[in-house]
Length: 395
Image 1 (tube, rainbow, N blue to C red):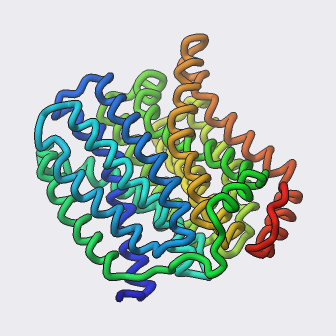
Image 2 (tube, helix red, strand yellow; image 1 turned 45 degrees about the horizontal axis):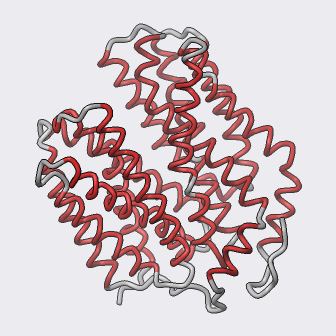
């Protein structure tokens, strides 16, 4: 059995790379397949259904099961789904396959971070930030790789299936914790987490962070074209620069996360992101300064979600899988709700003003942490010492 923390950590990074591939391939391949916007949207929705169910179930199971075996099962499911995706052209069949792709990447999202928190007792913020750097790297990688393959996207799916299948075999012969020794029944864990006001605040902040990141990623090229007058190629380059800022930020802030309390760092990032995104979206800048604020906005939002994952996992150490499963509901919720809010606002005002929802949510995150930071920090300190067999209390 493989128990080496370095091997398991690198394997987690590769898993998150293919999580990024799984989320990006719908849009990257839709033009080659010939999907209509309706069909593309339905594929994304079905993937999110599989993701939501899987991230909750796998997160809960990771508190009482071998995390490596769970990762092996998710990898096997994802490898088979990648291999068969659009092997046949029937759209309904591929909707079902996309459901299983969502379930596979949901297992990665539900287990990988909890596994890393169990493997590493120091610099946990760094490992989680790098883990999520690889999600962005995977999404960028598949997009650029399809260009290299001249959009022969089926070949990339088969190749991805082979790599993910190898990950499944590696995880199968590994061991990464079998849950807590003082095992809690599922009903008790759910009852306890339902009373946690701190976890609800973390979830709300995560919805802000994920919604802002995914919303800006989807809307930035359109903003640069319609509001700043850039052509298609420069606006897409602007998106790459923004994503590069996110990737760099996850590495840089991960390195700094051990030198500042996580709650204070998250608050600082919300404030910095609010200022930088406001300038980017509402101040007319020359091209050079546009590049600077694209990078700074990416840096500001880059580690909001990874740091909240680390904070949640270290706060609920004995229930990290279950707690992270709840927190990661922010991915589909934020990814749907925040862009939808922008869409609704554009019916009543201009596109540029509607984008003001992003700095507004960032400022709101800063206000929540500033107003209740001391109380939240005190409750976090209390929660870290609650024994497993203590009766749940409202927090």
